[in-house]
Amino acid sequence: MTKFSTHTQEMLFDFELLPTSAILLSTDEINQAVEFSSQINNSAYQWQTYLNALALFAFEQWLEARDDSFTINREKCTVLQPAIANAICAVSNLQVGEFKLCLIATGSLTDEEVSLPRAVVELPEYVPHFYVLVEVLEEQESAVVQGFLSYQQLTERLANVNLLPQEDWTYQLPLTWFEDNPDRLLLYLRCLEPEAIALPTVPPERAYNLSRIQDELTALLPQLDSLELWQVLNWEQGTAVLTSPELLDWVYNFHDSPVETRNTKSLQNHLSDLIKLLTQPAINVGRWLWDELDNLAQEFSWVLLPIAPATAMRSPGEEFTAIKSQLQQQGLEIPLQARAAFKDLLLAGFQLRLYAVTWHLVSESDPHLWTLLLVLGAPSGDNLPYSLKLRVSDQTGILVEQGINEESGGSYLFTRVVGSWDEKFLVSVSLTDGVELTLPTFAFYPG
Image (cartoon, rainbow, N blue to C red; front, side):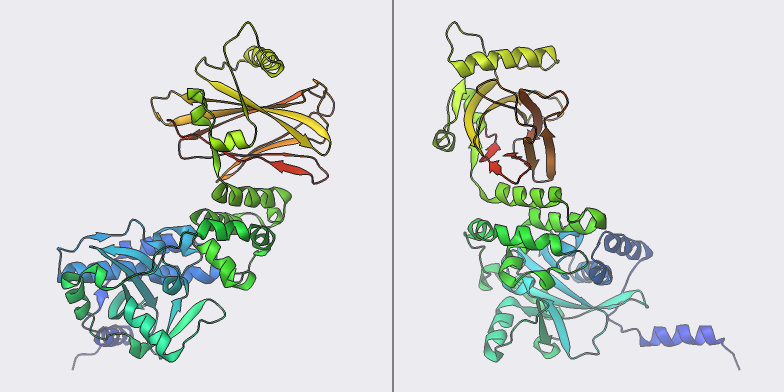
């Protein structure tokens, strides 16, 4: 009689328990899942992201094995975007043909309920046509596509039983809500028109809602530390964050930053600047190159100046000619095609004047670059107050925060930033006692 070792018997036992519908996961796919989960700095979501990635790989195998004519597009898939996966535990925005799918990965179906993030139920940015349930058998390095549920079915059943979301921004759905024959999903993907399942549209007031609660978010988000969004924000505030890729990036980078830097003034300043960049209208300095001011620039009393010397100039023009000469001595050449404008400011009783100069940068590597040169001074020519600071931010962070050298003093602050045509800059002038003036955003849209 043949004898087997205990280890061999266990392997055979595991093999026998593996469902015939299981999809085997390769070592490479498992390693990729580990890599994706390692990018998640929210420890509570790391394991789920690992399961989500395995579910994605298994579902793609499952679909291709049954019909290789389907076009699978994972470009916008949330599990592959760390900032989103760090906040939403689902594989949303997976595109199969014209349909949007959301994969719900679970490590075990012994429970009678399935946890679904509130975001993929209520936020149009993440709502799919179909929710697909995938059981990941992690120890057996395999997964099983167990069932699916359409968005229409979900909303009807939620309304019928008045099922409300949990405190942690999840819905606990009965397992029986899911169609247990996943092959029927193939029929829908082949034959159903996407319009047959009406999805919600993104409301136009997203930016307005964000601007309305910007002070709340600026105060609350730096309190995250080791907490999750739902522990700090209400759902309205959470919606503003979860529907803004830029704010999700901020949260991701916040969790990734050293603990000792998380409550610094610089961090809060950038958060405030970021929300303004996302919500405020922008002055199009690209129009300046055509000797034009847009309505916003006119509203805020910007005045165009010529760059080339002229026989008769107003006082600001004469002043800027001297500034230009000083910059040239420091090695900064301002091309003739550049255009400048100025605006007088009043900050806590101090009279200030801000010059802004812009031009299109010619680059072989990237033809869509522009630059913004800023010069902050006083119309009287007096030295600037020592406590004065000039700050420039973009969506990635604070680019410049410049102050006066207390030993040498100075009549001007100079700074220059470069960006692509889709980048905007926010400029703020402040004093150390908390008085701050923020100007409308600068953008460059060549006419």
